Image 1 (cartoon, rainbow over the protein chains, first blue to last red):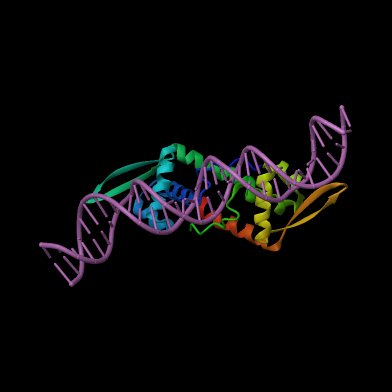
Image 2: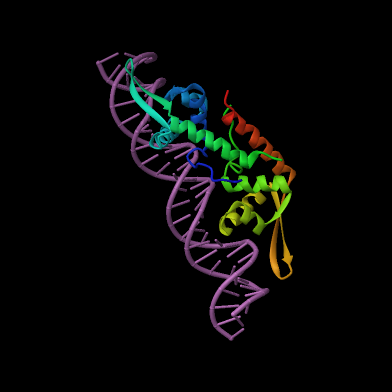
Length: 95
Length: 95
DNA sequence: TTTATTTGGTTTATATTATAAACATGTTTA
DNA sequence: TAAACATGTTTATAATATAAACCAAATAAA
């Protein structure tokens, strides 16, 4: 009960990013920004953190002439999310 | 989906405090400190915040000669917790 | 064509939060 | 009576989240 919650996931925006990627596997920067209603700056920072932690991978390329940042969830990211959800149950399951 | 999470509850320690109080209705400072493994200082600060928000009430008295701080959940606190849990489901329910 | 706007981000600055360390006020114990 | 303990609070610092400002390139408007 009340186990430590992964601080990387216990953040509204980072949790939303991972949740989104868990569901759809991979997504572009702009798509994530729209779905999460985050500002670009905030999103950029949080994607960096998730990437540095190995929870996602980031591939930068060009789509036509526009830069494109594609984010993909990793196995490590999936495992971390599952653990986080499980730990959270110790807080929110009431009986 | 991805609704704003109440910042007052989206904090590991404050969530643990509220979760504890939801389950047992009221508890003493020392008891909460033990159950949550928080430092006294941190706990003191977070109890203040929850109290200022009207999520809990705090009654100070003496148990014998020792000061005693009793925390009680309020209806507002219960409602906030329930909303938080519900909002969180938008993040962690995978389908 | 040159000015303004948009797109896709990054960097930097600021506000908020969490946390620990130090302190205050007594009480108990050696 | 001095040292250690209990119950907190206050204050200082570190970490985090977030927004604002910025950059570079492309496109649209004048």
